[in-house]
Amino acid sequence: MNITYEKCGDYLIPNLITNSESEGELRKFGLMRKSYSENYRRGIYSGLLLSGELKKHLLMVQEQAEERFDLLAQQMVEKEGVMEQLKAQDQMLWVKRMNNIRARVEEMVLKEIVCC
Image (tube, rainbow, N blue to C red):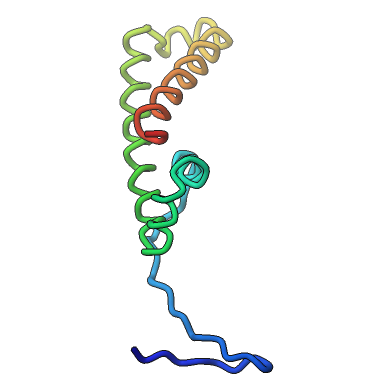
């Protein structure tokens, strides 16, 4: 192994180069997965962090969760008949039903993908 050091005061500090991280921004589901892994799956979290694969894993989970969220929300909107006609007639009822659908779908996605 060829390790180089940098002198900082009286100490020699190794020059460590990290692997390049995956491109992308962590959003809601990715951050929730990170928090869950940190608190409840500490071994897996540490392994991914040390191998440099953590962000890649979080982005993959985030993408799956967002796709599942969109699919389930669309299916529930169609099944429950929360359409633009209702929005035109009674906006508050439409908002109430959409928020309810989004909350239920988010709970399902958390249980199926984020916290498994």
